[in-house]
Image 1 (cartoon, rainbow, N blue to C red):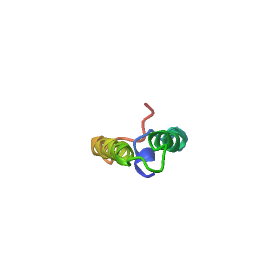
Image 2 (spheres, rainbow, N blue to C red):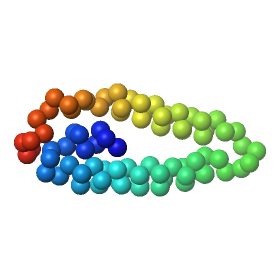
Image 3 (cartoon, rainbow, N blue to C red):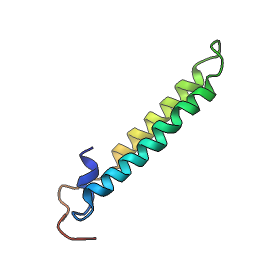
Length: 80
């Protein structure tokens, strides 16, 4: 979780990080099992839809990580 607090101003740094972390967990971890269960209803069914869904989610994660800016040179003392 280190990149989250580093990108925020010092006034609300950890509150924003905790809120973002909890909402992301609720949305991704809460909905993913239902999506996967709907994609794989019968035991004899192909797992290709599951593999495609998980691959797309991994690709989205990798792209978002690569788009995250480094914030070590930002002025974190000013309130924005």
